Length: 119
Image 1: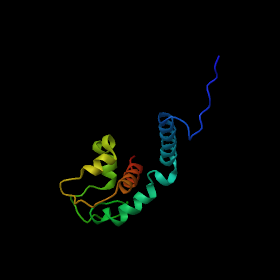
Image 2 (image 1 turned 90 degrees about the vertical axis):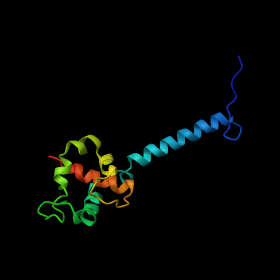
Image 3 (image 1 turned 180 degrees about the vertical axis):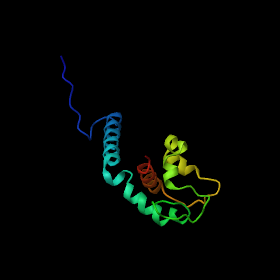
Image 4 (image 1 turned 60 degrees about the vertical axis):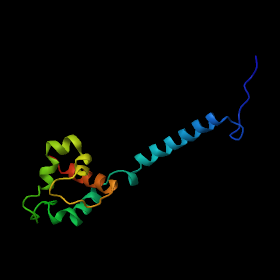
C-alpha cells in the first residue's frame, strides 16, 4: 500500500490552494458577520434617525413631526411592509422621500432601531 505524500502549501496543486483560500475567506466572513462591530447597531440607528430622519419623521416619543405626511417610526415599525421587507423597504425609497445617499450600514442600523420600536 502506498502512502499519500503530504503536500506543503508551496507544492499543493492549485485546486487545493484555492480550496484552502476559500475556506479561509469563508471563516473570515463568518467572524466579521458575527462580530458586534459589523452587525446592525440600534443605538447608532437611533442617533442617525435623530440627525437625519427627525427633520420629517417622529423618531422619538414626544417629538413633533416636521412633515405631517411622514409616518412616525413607531407606525413604520408596526407596518406590514416593514415587517415583511425590513431594511429592503428602506432601500426601495418612497415617492415623497428624497434620496439621502445612505450607506448599507446606516440603513442596517436604522432598520435595527425601527425594529426595536415594534410592540
